[in-house]
Image (cartoon, rainbow, N blue to C red):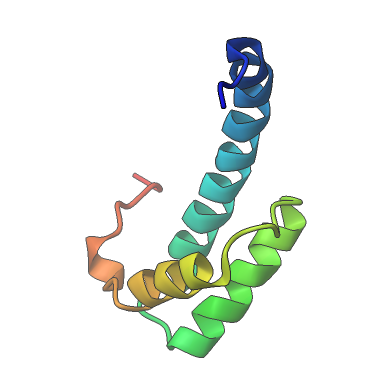
Length: 82
């Protein structure tokens, strides 16, 4: 079963926009919650995704991102205030 290449071209801008929303939510959560307990990070990430209207993310992806953010020491984050 072949897929029409134009369908791919039509879908890509939607996919790219959705990924940008997810990236903004993750970066915002990382900046505000790095190194904090998993539960707090997970909740903050879910809320950030909702604020970006990007809540359609596989739960396992959210869990893994929250784990990574929770395990990131704050000292590894760049200082954006200098």
